[in-house]
Length: 208
Image (cartoon, rainbow, N blue to C red; front, side, top):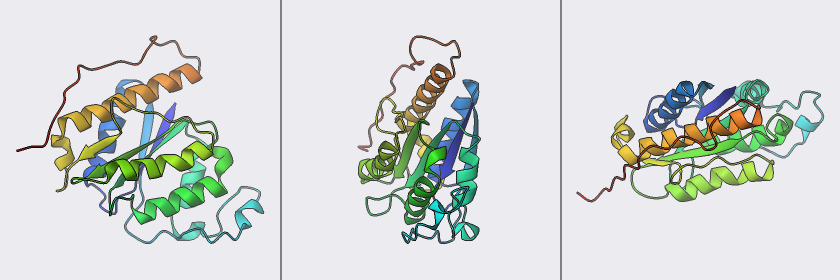
């Protein structure tokens, strides 16, 4: 079992990476392999509705040589689930990640259908729930089961690595990983518990 994690931040090891690493570490503890792919800090093309991907036998996007869209489509052929992670800009996910998501699901949709999916968003203060919802909606149109957590899959932080100080946010990431691992085991017929593991809730507030 393998989960593909997409770091949609232009900062390779920023707070989005911090959150996804927490997910990856917990997946490993649950016996599930993972891979974090960084979207990079160069432009990702948006879809131009040319329809050429539907004419290609392998459903490759015609702009695939310019960014990692086709690489992600190919990796999903070997992956059982996907998690998209993004910082919040103006209450929205990063533009590069939105372009990637739209093109990969349209061109390579057959490799995503039926596979569990989740979104993770990171913000300084607000907009995380709106960005989170935006990333989840395309998955729902592709018959992909959504994996949740004890709260929305959100963490807080501004400076690089600061999200690690969000105690509840990091627990939310671990719970997401536990839920994902449990779902994959059920789907693959692997014996597991009747319900995913649960940690004792550790709430954290930001009034200082």
